[in-house]
Structure formats: C-alpha cells, structure tokens
Amino acid sequence: MRKLVVLAALAASLAVAACNTVQGAGKDVSAAGHAVSDTAADAKH
Image (cartoon, rainbow, N blue to C red; front, side, top):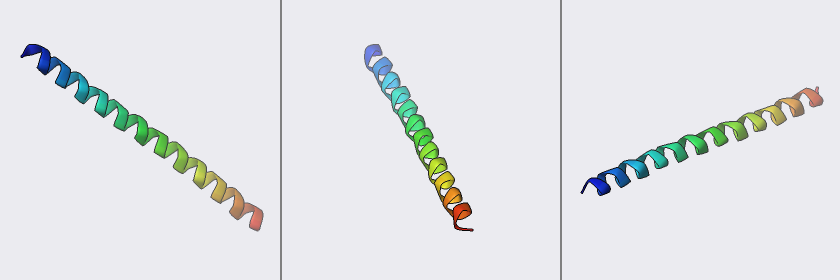
C-alpha cells in the first residue's frame, strides 16, 4: 500500500512539473510572436 502512495505522489509531481514546463514554453512562444508582430509594425511605419 505504501508503494502505491509513493508512486501516486511521484506521478502527481511529474504531472505538475510537465504542466509548468509546457506553460513556460507557451509563454516563450507567445513572447516571440509579440516580438515579430512589433517588428513588423515598426517596419510598416
């Protein structure tokens, strides 16, 4: 029973870490998109 609890806690912590990683990658991609949009807007003027 104790092994099951430890494995469940480990799986939950890995899932949370994965979500944080994906969220961080999404923010990076979003920031890059904003930079491209800003550069395009500056070139337009």
